Image (tube, rainbow, N blue to C red; front, side, top):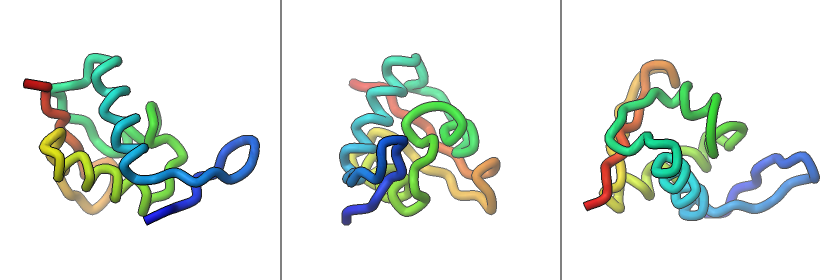
Length: 88
């Protein structure tokens, strides 16, 4: 699955696994591991800002499949959330 992500210098191609890695690294670097955050919070700050909804979903699915997070569904991004698991 390859999706385009808008960038200031044009369109770049980003893989969901790359965004998943960036998101988890960002969560680690900012002390968010172990915390629960709404998608709205993650869209406002961090690697999900400006990400296509399909790319975002695929990246979160990849993190969840790798047991790095749990995704909680909701009707809106203010109700949906993510819990980042700490590394063992």
